[in-house]
Image 1 (tube, helix red, strand yellow):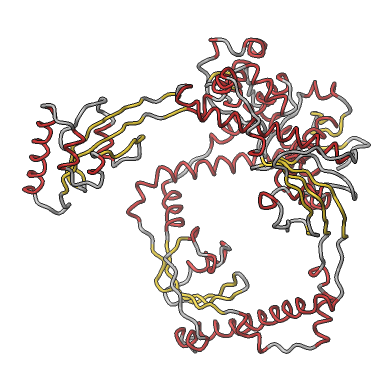
Image 2: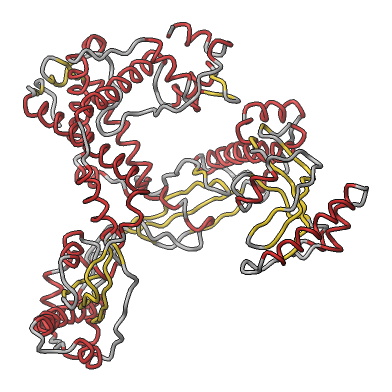
Length: 631
C-alpha cells in the first residue's frame, strides 16, 4: 500500500481521504529511524533499555530543535542562550521519551498497519492540490523538511502508535458528578473587591541620597548598566513593487497558478437579499403586528402581479436600505439574524418570502441572487490570481537582482543600477533596538548581528515588502560604562528601589492596621490622596493584573470573607485590597456547562495517567551513554 502511495499517490483510489497530520511529534515524540535502521545508520550514542539512539539520529533531532529556536528568537538565539536552555540535554530527553513510548506500545501489542499510515498521509492538506493528494507535492514538502518518503512513513507510524498508546492509557480515566460540580464552582465563583493603589513615587522625597550610596549601588549592580554590543552597517533595500512592473504573465501561467492554489478561491454558500421592512416596536400589541403583515401581504400581491420589488422597497420600506431598493447585501450563513437566515437560505433565486417577524418589525424578503458553495471560477478569480502570481514573481525577481548587486559589492565592482533601489547607513545600535530609519520599520535589522567581522555581507533578507542585505561596518563590544556617564540613571534606579522599600514597609503596617480595624479603608485612601477603585467582579482565572495573577494569591482572596484585606504587588506598585462581598457562584449555567467540563476533566485525567505512566517508565529505564558521546 505504501509503495503504491509513493508511486501512484494521485490516482482516483486516493481522492476521498482528507484531513490533517503534523510534520513533527509534540513533546512526547519526534522523528527517528527504527531500531534496526538506527544501528545500521551509524555509531550508537546511547541506549534506552535495549533500544539504541544513534549519533546521527540525535544530531538530526538537535539540528531540528535548533532551527525551531532560531526561527523563534532570530538573532537573539545566541550560543549563550542555547547553553542556558540546555538544548542538547532537552533534545536527548525528548528522544528518550519517544523510545520509551514506542517500547510500551510494542509491549501492549499496539501495531499500526500500512493502510493506516497511508491514510494519515493522504489526509494531510500540505500534500494536497485542490483537495486531492498529490504525489509530487508530497515529495516536495518532505524534501523541504529533509525527509524522504520512507523516513516520513516511519515517522507517521510512530506518531499513530504513540497516539494510540495515549488513548489506551487513558481508558481508565473517569470523572464523577462531584468532581464536575467542584470544577464548575472553582471556575465560576466570582468575587468583588475594592483597591487602593500605592505608588512608590510618592515616597521619593523621603529617600536620602548620598554620593557614596550611589557609587556603592553602581559597583554592586554594574551589570544592570552594561551597554550591549553595538553595530553599525550599510544597507541596500529593494521594494517588491519597484520590480513588479517588469513582471509579465502569460494566460497559461495564470491558469497553472490558479490550479495550484485553488484552495484559496473557495467560497461559501451566499445569498444576496433585498427587503421591504415595516417597523414594529417589540412591545407593540398584536394589532400593530397584524397591520404590518397585512401591508406587506398587499405589497407581495402587487409584486406577484409584475411590480418591481426594488421600486416597491424604495416607496414602502421603512428600513435604512430603502433608498437602495431594499438591497441588504450578500451574506454567508451566520451573518444574518437567525430568523431571517433560516428563511432566505431555504429560498430559491428570485423567490419572495411571506412576511417574517423579527425584533425590528416585519420583513418581506427577496433573494435576488444565490451562489452555492464551491471554488470561484478562473475568470472570476483572475484578477486575484494575477495579483498573487505577480507578487510571487516580483519577490523572486527582486531577490535575484539583489543577489547580483551583492556580488558587485562583495567583489568591489561598480554597483549595478537598479530602479527603485534604496541605500543607507545605520548609526550604532544594540540588538533588539534597531534604528528607526531602516525600511519596513526595522524588522530586517537582525541580519547585522549574524555577521562575524567588519566588511562581512549578509545574504538577501526577505521582508514583507522588499528584500535587503547588509554590510557590517563596525562593532563596539559590550562594556560597562564609567560611573560618571550613567550617574543620572544610577540615581533614578536607586531612588526607585528605596521608594519601593518604603512603600512596601508602610503598606504592611497599613494592612495590619486594617485587619485589626485600627484604621479605616476610606481614611487611608484620603490620606494617600488616591481614589478607591472597584474592578468588575472576577473569577479565579480572570483576575485583573493589579490583583496579581499569581494563582496562590488569587486563591487566598477567595478564602477571605466580606470585609477581609490583603496586599498585592504589580508593576512596581503596591495595592491594598478589600473584599466587598463574599465570593458567589451562579449555578444556573451548570447544566449547560457540564458536558464540556466533563470532557475537559476527562482529558486532563487521561493526560495525567499518561504522564504518570511515562514517569514510571523513566524511573525504571536503563539509560546509558556510549563512550565518546556527551551532552
